[in-house]
Structure formats: C-alpha cells, structure tokens
Image 1 (cartoon, helix red, strand yellow):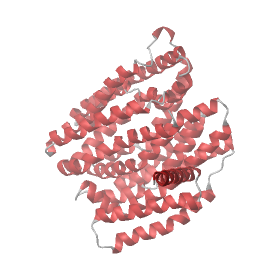
Image 2: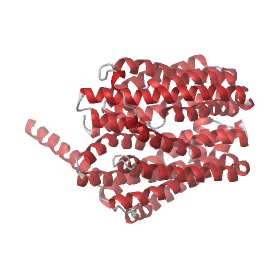
Image 3: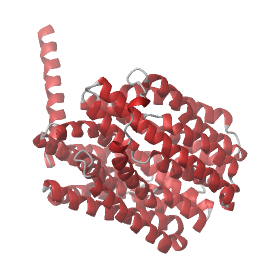
Image 4: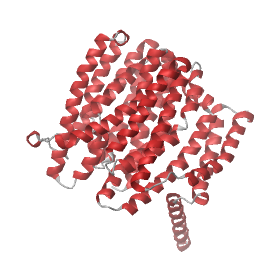
Length: 488
C-alpha cells in the first residue's frame, strides 16, 4: 500500500484516538466536574505509566523488525514469536509490581476501585499487537476496527454516564475499548503469523527491546510521570487542569504523529536498501509538512485558548488556559523530534543515541518537577514538559548531524516565522476586536490562517509535497474542462 494511503488510514486511526474522546469531553467535563476528571486521569495516567514498562520498546522495535521480516513467512513467524514472548514477560512482571503498589501505597489504595479496572487495561495491552499490523503496513484493518469500537465508546458514554458518581463507569468504558480491540486483533493476527515457541531466541532482540524501552520509560519522566507527580505534589483538581490542556494539545499533535509512524517502515526499508538520497528527500518533505502544520496550529490554539477551553469543557476549567498556552509550542518541538528520532535515528538503528536523548530529557524532567511543580502546579508541569523536550531536540539534532551531516533547518524555520507574523496579527485582531461568539471567531481565524499557510507552502517556501498536490489539482481541473468542451 502506498505512503499516501497508509498516511490516510494512519491519520484516521491516530486522530480517532483523540477525536472520539474529545467528542464526549464537553459532555463528560460538565457531568463529572474538574475533580472527578482529575481523578480518572490520575488513575489512567498511573496505569499508562505501568503500561510503558510492560510494553518497553515493542512499539518501535516491533514495527522495525516486522517490516524487515515480512518478505519471508518463516522469518516473520519467528520474529513475531520472539517479540511477543518478550512483551509477555515484561507484562507479567509489571502486573506483579502494580498489584504490590496498589496495596502498599496509601494514596493508591484510596483509589483501588479505579486501579483494579486499570489492571484489565494493562493485561490486554499485550494483545493489541499494533506493532505487527503497522510493520506489515496494514493500516486499513486497524483503522476500521478502531472506528467501530470508538464509536461504540462514544454512544456508551452518553447512555451510561449520567452523574458525578458515574466516574468509574466512564473509566470502565475506556478500559473496554482496549479489551475489545485486543480480542479482535488476536483473531485477525492469525491470518499473518503463527506462534512458534520451538524457535525462540530472545537474546537477539533483548538489547534493542530494552534500549528502546528505556527511551520510552525515560521519556515518560517528563510526560506521563508529570500527571502522577502533580497529583502527589499538588491536588487532583490541578491534575484536571493539566490533563485538560494536554488532551487538547494531543489532538493537534495526533495528525502529524500519524505521518511519522507511517514513514517508519518505509524509511527502514530505504536504509536497508541503502537508498540514502531518497531517504533524505523524504526527510525534507517531512520538515515542510511539520512547519506548515505546526505554525498555524500553535497560533490558533495559543491565541484562542480561553475560547477553546470554554467551548470544550465549560466553566470551571479556566485553570487549564495557561498550561495549554505553555504547551502548544510542543507541536513544533515534538514534531521535529519525531522526524529526527523516529524517521532518521530509529531506521538507522542508532538505538544508543536515542537512549542518550531520552536520558537527558528524563534527568531534566525529574529535576524540574522537583523545582517547579509545587510552586507553579499545573503550569509548572507544562514548563517541565516543554523544557525537557527542548533538551531532547538539541541532543537529537547533534546525533543527526553526527551521522548524516544534516543541520537544523535554521533558514527554513526563519522563513516560516516571518510568514507567521501576518497570521498571528490577524488572529489577535479577531480575538480582541471582533464582537462575535467564541466558536465563530475560532473558525474564521482558522480558515484564514490555514489557507494562508497553504499559499505559503506553494508560493513562499515552494514545498515539494505542496507543489505536487497543486499540479495534480490543476491537471485534474484541466482534464475535466477538456472533457466538458468535447461533450459540448
């Protein structure tokens, strides 16, 4: 399947993971209130933190190794079996530690009902097998499956969550999404792979599994861990503000994240074939796509943060406005990291470099959590995240230059900053002076800003991808015009 089709399916898959919860968020935030939202997000954040340890490097290593093995049925079965067994062992160990934590930490035992529901999520994450299907580039199946299950989730929320006391039902529905997805994935995976315990050789996969897993765990020190630490250092209400801001940010980042995951198997194949010219060409396209998407997104979300928070969550969530504005530049920062780490360093198998990046970010995150969060609360957590990501970006860029002599695109970035000024000024004008309701103001500014950046991509920076689409649209228009003239 082509990159474009895979990108379409992966975009739908990734966006649906955030859009469907966002559809119910305006309803659920008003029904449960900021405290119960914070409680559910605290429990889920803790469960997700343990899931990081259970999954370790499987999501990146699995995609890379399956993509390399899919030419041989026997090799594919062997690769899958080894990776699955490693994942099973780490999941088993994590489950044991999780149960011990619940019964020995008073703060956790206090919320044991939610955490016991989270046990099912942790267990069934083992059977998600997303890495298998992404390595096979079978994005169509997992997209259709995800849409079906998440649609059922949305309907169920409106049917069963009616009051503040139904917060546990809300979290149960979140868990059931994972459970049913896993059940369907197990059956579908049998079409492609067969588990072979007789030919296991875990040693070949153990080191990259642990190294890439360490990267994921270390990264969590300034992402997932922020939620848990904020709950202990401040309050559940502040968790509600912070997670509301991050939830909205994740929706904006999701589309670009879909592109980088689609590119991973293709970039890995190019490295294996030593087609480095094409490898660098696709990398340049990725930078243009990032800048053209990130700048308008940051402008709209930062300027209209109060209206967006009010529209999505309602009154009582004003504490999420400042964290959201602080977090929004991460669309650009993390987007750039995804290019240099997921599309460049990972296919090149520079796992040690990836580990060092994450270690630097983790150390920064831990220190800043201790310094900032108690004083600045949810805004402090936002500052921890953005500073840590900047450290990771600088480190990652160093290694990209070391291995590929690829410099940070300063000149291109500067062009986008200059081009952003008119869009930013207009957004401020709409925000301050046009007396229209919040939603209409956001829509007007969004239409202008994204259209403006579409023009910038074509005529300003002359992006290869944008020019290709422009020529395709023009050619299609000419063909239709010629057909109409012939008919006449």
